[in-house]
Image (tube, rainbow, N blue to C red):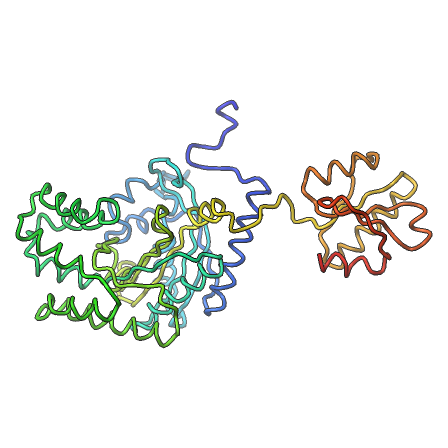
Length: 434
């Protein structure tokens, strides 16, 4: 294909078969979000650069990947790189907003990053956030909603890993990490899934962290087991460190609320989880699918971000679902039956004499809410059947003169290659049941 006809690198076209899968997935996601009381929100694709580049909002790495330019008026703007920063702007600019404000947002975002399998420069995110609630109940509800969403999508093997930013800060103090090595320490810890314990320990040493400090870090992050047991063991390490004690108390409350909501045990405390350190202020969480898939959602509490725009801190927590990766997993595992069309039936004319009848029948079915199509090229019946088959339309309603005299039509099942006569007045009920 000539390059000018291809989408820009890292961006894609979606033909009907792909779009139907995406729509089916998004409909399920929206349904669960709304069941939990989250309300829809949309924001512009373009934001003022002052918003996107606010210190502490996105981070230097993300800003390097942000599409930004000057508009015709000379104002610097950029394409949104996530849905959280626009939400913070909306809340800061709407002082009369009723709190807590629970919103969901499903829109595209853009980042000029490396293009690889499962990584694109334009991609879809689905976020839920609760603004204005300090209680860990808000965090627990966000996680419960995410678990319900993945269950609704048909995921069986997934796990929510939970940690707390305050516990991570306490770990730094407990281990004795030097200030200039803090980022290095957490980058090494964050690789635990990829390189294992020995790999993390080696990386800590390679980054100039002393053997004793590395051993303390490994001793801490290797704590595993049931949530209550992990927190009890971790508490011994952070006793006397205020942040750590607060983090432990928050996670205890968080776990208690999940138990109250009768969330099945698809979560665990993972003291090695270290996402977005500058972004979050409390609990953090990631949803991991089966081995080899990695993270499919992530989020946490960010009580300081809205204050960047309003001058007044407002508590906030949320999670973002990586829709593109979710879609790929669902397709690979064949969790949704692929289909080329949403049309239930094609109305075919045996000849030109009954064409008007076929058109009228199609309109009557459409008015009854049944998605149908008919021939626009005046083709013979054989070609009409071939066209319906090529589109994957499951049924063909064949309109003929003899059948009309009897008040019936023939309904052909395109998969079974079987035909049956159906009374016209029963057609709507038949197609609705199909």
